[in-house]
Amino acid sequence: MSAAVKDATRKATVTTPSDREIRIERVFDAPRDRVWQAFTDPKLVAQWWGRGNKLVIERLEVEKGGHWRFVEHGPEGVHGFEGRYREVTPTTRLVHTFEWDGMPAHVIIETVTFEDAGPGRTKVVNVSLFHTTEERDGMLQSGMEGGLNESYAALDRLLATMG
Amino acid sequence: MSAAVKDATRKATVTTPSDREIRIERVFDAPRDRVWQAFTDPKLVAQWWGRGNKLVIERLEVEKGGHWRFVEHGPEGVHGFEGRYREVTPTTRLVHTFEWDGMPAHVIIETVTFEDAGPGRTKVVNVSLFHTTEERDGMLQSGMEGGLNESYAALDRLLATMG
Image (cartoon, rainbow over all chains, first blue to last red; front, side, top):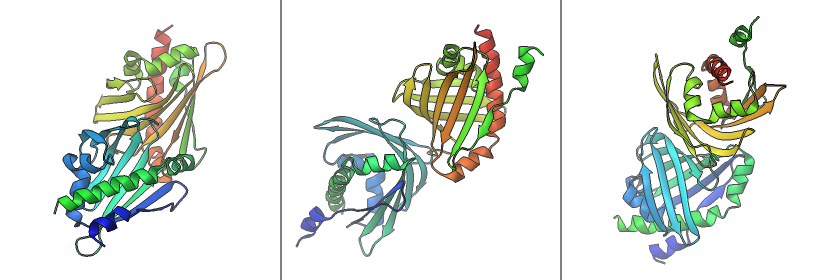
């Protein structure tokens, strides 16, 4: 089985470590610095974050206190997302807020860690902390997991071209 | 004792209804629509929110999804604050996020309600929900209560001139 076929079937592992959290784990076939670049360089983020939909990166200031704002233009409409960086530790850790325009001021804290996972592989762990359990459950029921796997499949394809 | 002297000594009531919340209650000698105006009109907000310091209102979009950003120029330096509105119910209820530039992406949800409290008086209740107990305790220990009472004293003075 080729690497491309394996990637197409790879799913993220989604768990709920507490009643206000969602934890997502996924391994990518690329070294840590390359995966970091794909999460922080606007030209690269635009190629995978929107699951193949057009994504306009209005702001992406990857530094403590910096803001980000992306607008996805999909078949079901236009969706804006935004937030701000709390912590940026290059190639290792990002902490930022996440907010969808459709539910303004419902704010998630996302902590993303990048770990070596064997030669040429990187494990990305994303822990989302919500203000309430209801908001967490709403996200779980929103079809988030399907969208996430589509984005990560697009990221697999991008990483394969970065070698 | 004159009304002015009474106002000068009036303190907000601060309680902690849960381990991630702070509740602040304060009565003002003005009708509800006037107090609402003082919380939502940029020209009026600028006169009390900064406790007498110069306050630049960079954004104040009082509608669901709208953003706000204030910059306070005080003797100890320049401090930016910002957030976004979740809910706006005129003269009754505001829900918005609150973030200080000094701790970016540490986000509080503030729910402010305005209630009639007898003829010509209004009770304002502000409940702040934090992501963690540590953040809540950090706010309690920050000197918040003193600053709050200074702001509310400035608001008393403003309301008295709006009659």
